[in-house]
Structures are given as C-alpha cells and as structure tokens.
Image (cartoon, rainbow, N blue to C red):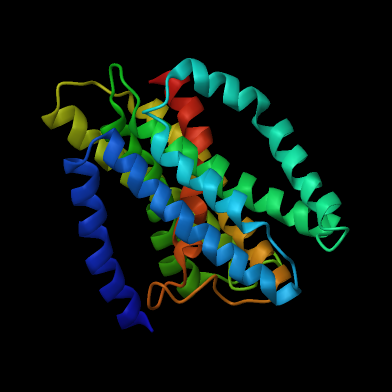
Length: 272
C-alpha cells in the first residue's frame, strides 16, 4: 500500500507542477472543471449506497461551468452569483413536483450539499490562480497546496509513529499529535517556500504573515479532511473511489485543498 502511495505521488506531483507552471488561467479553469466533474461523479456514485438519487444533470452542468469563470464577463458572474442559489432551489423543487414525489426532499438536499461542497470550494481555486497584483496567483496557489500537502505528510508521518490521543470518532486513525504535527509541517513548508521566493524572486513576502496564514489554512484543511470522512461514513464507503492507487478517489486527494481555497482567497486579498 505504501509503495502504491509513493508511486502515485511520484507521478502525480510532477504533472500537477508542470501544469501549474506552464498553464494559464484558462487552462487551469478547464483542469479544475474536469477535476470537479470527476469529484462529482464520485459523490453521485457513493450516494447510491444510501439509495439517494442525486440530480446528476444539474450537478455536472454547474461544475463544468467552472471552465468558463475567466471567459464570462465579470458583470454577468456577479448577477449569476446573486441569483444562482434561488434558481438552483427552484430547479430542485421543480424536480420533486414534476416527478410526483419520486424525487424526494432527501434527494434534493444531498444534491444541494454536493453542489455546494464541490462547486463552491473548487471555484475559489480558479479565482486564486487568476489573482493579479503584487503577488500573482501562480505563486499564491502553491500556498494552498503546500498547506494541504504539508499537513497531510507531517500528520501521517508523525501521527502514525507517535499519535496516542485519538481526535474524533469521525476519523479514528487521526490523533491530536498528528493534527498538531501536520500544522507545524505546513508552516515549515510554507515558510521555506517563502524563503525561496524572497531570495530568488523580485518580491518580499512577510514571514510572520505567511506563518499565521499557513496555520489557519492547515487547520481549515484538516476540517476539510474530517468533513470528507463524515460524508464517507454516512455513505458507508472507505474511499470515494479507487482512481488513485493507494490514495483513494479524487475527493480523497483534494478534500483539504477544496476547504482551504475560499479562505485562502480571502486572506490573500486582505494581507498580500
């Protein structure tokens, strides 16, 4: 199992790195849209375990629209964001009415949760990557990834060896020692990244600010990890899929990243 995890990471990490460095915001929008579609497919398939009928067409349609974030004029996006939820609820309840209650309140509730969970969080990844200013999105996006990956690696390595105090029944394998170690690891990785940027780039990013931001993002990322565990426990699955050998499915890989993205976007706007 460990070898599978290592091989998958050894192949996946360079591919993602190349894409983020070479790509532009339009390419990344498409990449994240595809990622979100795969994640939505996993969510829909898992929901079938509890006989929940996710309204798939609107779920897939909305996450596919992520690819158009930087193509659609800002004015239209603003109107869409304001009226989006009311229209979505209208469509969902129409399904209940038209189906003569074959689609239930439970079905549309889980459809809404899936859309909010995958679409809302994923959109902010594209927004962060497209940010312009003193520090551009191509640089900032790595703080999200390093916060998530640094947390995962340190929490797994330290928690597995020294973790004694269980954190929550939601995820019994996680320990308080692992969670704390994960946050410390995320801070270390983000500060090292900042050191490299300040030394070799033409920018000056405050270490204290990054230290505080990375602590916040690491903690939020761990909440995202627990949130995914809550969903899996309800759907009675170990992983969302077997897409990545040794790592589970797409959601298993991006659960922390998705939760981090909106808060990172706000923090970057405020402090960087």
